[in-house]
Amino acid sequence: MEFFQEQAVTSSDKAFFRLRKEIVEGVIPSGSKLSETELSTKYQVSRAVVREAINRLEACNIVERRANVGARVVSLSPEGLIELYQVRESLEGMAARLAAQHMSAQEITDLNALLNSQSHEVKSAELYYQEAGDLDFHYRIILGSKNSHLISMLVNGLYHLVRMYRVQLGMAGPRVTSAFDEHKHIVQAISNRDPELAEMLMRRHITYSKNNIEAKLQNSL
Image (tube, rainbow, N blue to C red; front, top):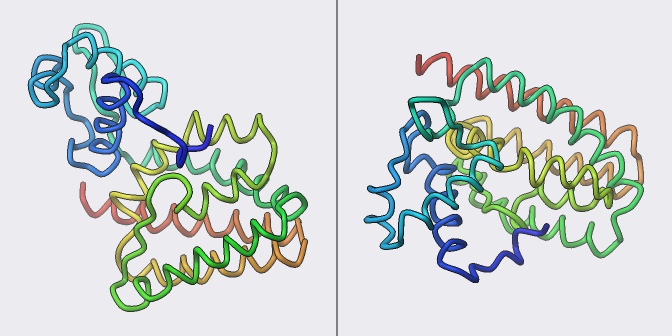
């Protein structure tokens, strides 16, 4: 369940990880049709391997299949963003509440160290790129909830779709400095073992992020 332990054991795993990364980071643009033939040539694997990778990406909610159209990367839209972030605000707010109750002192120390390691880039370059998994602040808090059902819903169900919006539209620009400060306040509430404040700050943080990404999406239409 923890991405930092993900290892590509088979050629199918390698194709899946590579395709997922290229979709999330926008190398393969949102809304693009996925051709098994083209991808099998590009990745130098069989079409069956590509087909399996696409099936797994469909389960991650970043690829969709339509009759007579085939597989496509999901489109990033204001409507999709609002629906996704309504769910995200509620579930990640709950995760922050539970993290304030259940994260160990060492996990909180490690979370502070992660933020400290990212502070220079945020302040100097207006860039807040977070790798998937262990280097992602939100991922750490989701795991810190210690609630297996919540972790499954967020990590296995929504994580990579959320990352598509965050990576392509939310990790650069003036907003990142505010987002980073909001992260620090959330960790402080977790450190103080204040579940109500941690939940409120997380929900507010995700609302602000939604507003920022929504504005970017509207400007790109």
